[in-house]
Image (tube, rainbow, N blue to C red; front, side, top):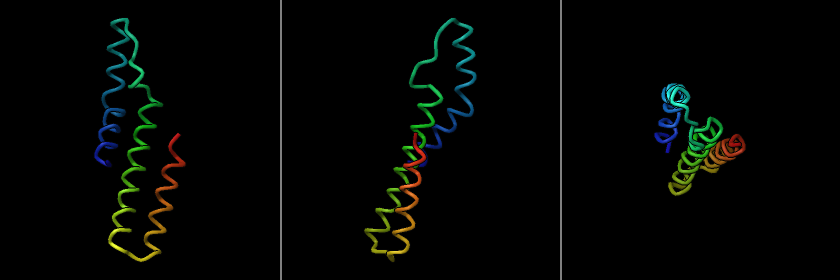
Length: 83
């Protein structure tokens, strides 16, 4: 999932701006699924999912409660940041 978020970051940082210019030059609008806000939201959801996977792995491995709690807090903070 982190790789998916990285892919979205790459699109956001390297592809969207040239694509937007190209579409504007052709008189076309940017598709909604390439909207800046949507891509940021999607990246945040994927990062939150990756954090949740780490928490689930720690839980299944029966790691110490403190570690599980820290990971759970990170999941919550990541989800709160997704807007």
